[in-house]
Image (cartoon, rainbow, N blue to C red; front, top):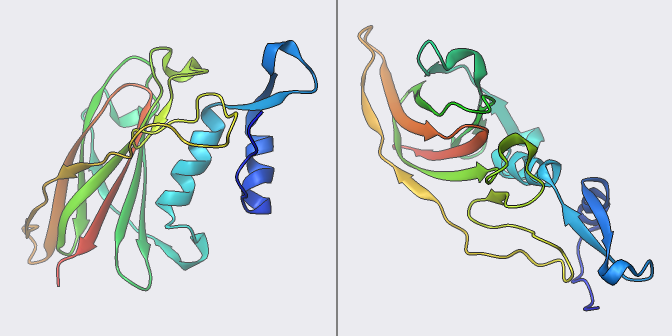
Length: 188
C-alpha cells in the first residue's frame, strides 16, 4: 500500500474521525480511509472561515430563496477582518428541490467565485460521488485528492438599496441537497 503523505496531526485526526475505515481485499492489516459527507463538511467549513475562524466576523445579510425554499436555505455570511473579503456559506437542506438564492450585502463588492459542495446521485444519503469544488477523496489509499479544483464566476450587481446605502447582490442556483461558498473581495 502506498505511504500516506505527511499531514498535520489535526488533519490526520479529523480524517480518522470523519471517515469510514475499509480494508483492502478484506485484509485487516491493509486499512484505507473512505471519507464521507462529514469530511467534505469539514473542508467546506475550513474554506468558509478562511482557515481561521478566530479572525472572521459574522455579518447580517438578506437572502431571498422564494417561498418554497426559504425554510431549507441556510446562510452564514462571514468577513475576513484583515482583508474585508466576504465569504458566504450557503446550504440547501431540501432533499429534492433546487433553489435560486439572491444574496444581498451592504457595501460594494467585486464579482465572486463560487465553490460547490455536491452530494452526487444519492443526495443527502451519498456515501460516494461527493465533491467539494470539483474534487473528491474517493477511497484514500494515498491520501490524495482526485479531480481538478473548479470554481464558477458569479457576477455582482452593485447599486443603491433605495435608502441611500450601497448594496451588492449575487444570484446563486443551489441544487437539492447541496452547498456552495461564495467568495468576493471588496470593491475599493
